[in-house]
Length: 105
Image 1 (cartoon, helix red, strand yellow):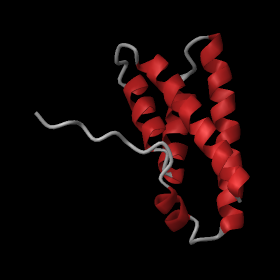
Image 2 (tube, one colour):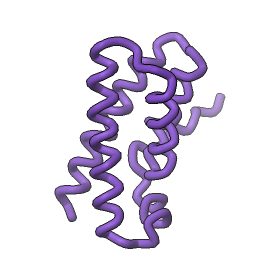
Image 3 (cartoon, rainbow, N blue to C red):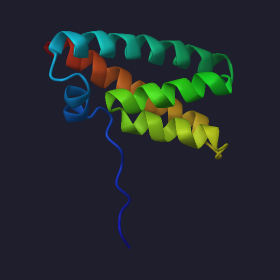
Image 4 (cartoon, rainbow, N blue to C red):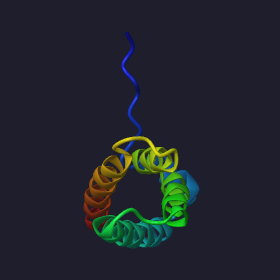
């Protein structure tokens, strides 16, 4: 049986391609996404956020190369059991990875 490929927490090659290698733009995009992550995690702590918030984070995650967040958000949209907890875990992992990457700039 084949093992399923796990989406990347943060695909830096994708991010670089989407920002045309502009490190300043990468920094700005990641900071905006990090703020979005923190806001959504706060909402998750208060209960299940609305569909628009989930859809927005999915699109933003795809844009920056946060595949695990996008996949988890999609599972929430599909109302899979345990998906909200998986999304929170993916958001936490992305938050850590992005913060570490921003410090390396």
